[in-house]
Length: 449
Image (cartoon, rainbow, N blue to C red; front, side):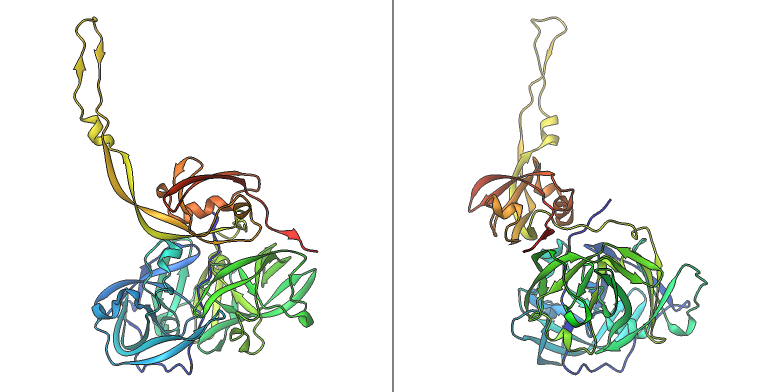
C-alpha cells in the first residue's frame, strides 16, 4: 500500500488577470492527444515546451497563469521578451513577491499548442519546488489548458487526454458522478458536504490539483466547521507569501455525492495564512491531490462541470507523518562505496601446496560517487524526532541501516508514514559529525486539554 506525505503547493492570486487572445488547439487530425505525466506526492508533473525548450510543470487547477521559477535564469534560455514587473500574492504571512510578466510566448503540451501565451517569471530562490519533491519542477500551469480543452486526468494510468471541445464525446458511465463548477478568478469550485461531529455541513471547495494534502477547511464556528479535540499543530506547506501552519485532524466523512471517504484527513490552516483565500465569497476550503487522485476526472470548463469515476486509489488509507520530520532534497554528497565490478576483476592466486585447494585474493576497490542528499527542513514540536534531539539542518545518512541515497525522497518520507510503534534508527550528518538517533513512530493525534 503506497502512502504519501502531505505537501502543499501555493495558491496563486493574480491581481486582475488578463487572458491572452490565443487559445490551445490540438494539432492533429483527431483533435485529441494523450500526454504522459509523473505522479509525485499526489501531484501531476507534465512536460511543457516553452519557446522550443521542454520543461517540467506542475498541473495546478488553482493557478490562473503559467508561472516559471526563474532562480536558474530559465528566461535567458527561453528568450522571454516583452516583460513588465508586477507583484503577486499567495498563501502565507509574508509580503508580495515580485515577478516579470511576459507575453507572446509559444506553449506546447503534446500536440496542443498555444501562441501568444502570457506567463510570469519569479526570481525568488525560495520558491523552488524541486527540493521539496525530489524532482525537477520548473513552473506551474493551470487555467489556460483547462479553459480551452476538455482535460481528462487518468490518475491510475498517469496520463492526460487533451481534446478540443467541438469533437469531444462523453461515454455513458453509470458509476460516475458529475458536479457543476463555479469559477472565481478563473479557479474551479464545487459545492459538496462534509460530516463533522456527526453533523453534515455544506461546503464550497476550491479544486486544487496543485496541493498534495487531502482537504483544507477554514474554521467557522457558526457553521460547525472546527477542529476536533484530537489534533496536532503542524507545518502545512510553503505558500507564495511564506510558510503555512495549522492544525491537522480527521473528519467523519467527505461526501462527493455517492462517493464517501470516511475518516478523511483534514487541515485547518491558521487564519492569517489564508486571509486572501477567504476573500472568495462563501469559500470553505480546498479539495487537494490526495482526494483527486482517487478518481479519474473529466474537466469541462466550457460546460462548467467535472465528472468523477473512482479508480484503484480510492480505498487507499489516509495516514499522517508519525515522525515529525519534513525532508527536502539538498543537492548531492560525495559517497565512498565498494566498486563491485572492479573487485570482481581482481587477480586469482592459486596455492599449490594443498591439493585441490584454490585461494582467491580479492583486491578491495572503492569508488567515489555523487549521491542525493536529504535534509531535515521542518521538525514538528514534541514529535518523536524532536524529542530524541534531531534538528533542522541534519542530513539523513541512513535509515534502519539502509543508506538514504538508495531511496527516492518520496520513498524515504513514506517510511515515516508506517504504523505506530515502528522503530526508526537514523544516522545523520550534523556539521561533519555522524550522530545516531532511535525513536518509535507515534500517532500524532492526541486529545488537547
